[in-house]
Figure 1 (cartoon, rainbow, N blue to C red):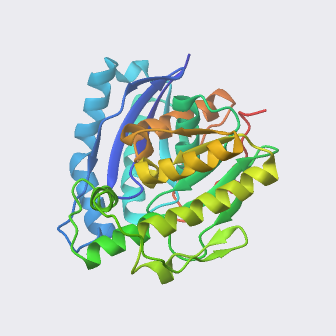
Figure 2 (cartoon, rainbow, N blue to C red):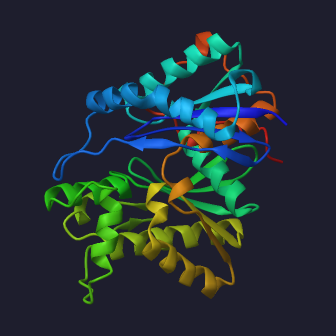
Length: 313
């Protein structure tokens, strides 16, 4: 039963998690929060991560009750994400791997979300809606790849919500999307908005002034199309926006009408975290993957379907 430690820091969250054979041993994280009306810039975010990552690492070890000698593999987010934060985490992970004498493993951030969602929910072969600040994709597994059936053609749904929050000065604490959701719960009037679904893809840039209900309806539509194509009876929502209870409710209605099952996780695992990287790393390490030091670079562009998924049948 290998023990894998995972380092995540592709955006404004920095997390370190440890997993052993499907058991989450620890998963501490920190969030870089900016004032209302401001986003997080790469350089400032990386500075935040550098300031806390060693503390978070020690917290992860202490919470798990483990020492360096107990770790079998060090996994880190290779991409996609913001360049400077990714580099910060990769440097620490490389250093730790060399100091501890452990193999290193670069993990695709998106696949980290999927594998963590599968572990926590026990979903077997779901159609996946991956929604976050940087990504919006409808995904299904086939022939050793997580295939992308549809995606945004401009900005991600989380980025759309974040930008709305900046325009109207909504607090970034704990997150813009969460605060928008709480405000939306108090609404009682639906305003008809632009609805832009193009085949299996969606466009959010033109709807930025209007937001939540219509965005989610578009996502439910393209997810249902992917389910029909794949003959799937399961939906798994992953990514930071996946915490939104209204999105889960709307997806649940669609699933009920189709006789399908909906799977989702709470904020411990849908928001970026270290243990999701550890879990994907655990699956990869168990199937023979290792990243050589010379190949342990990062990339801001790393599509979900670029990874060969050797750990699934």
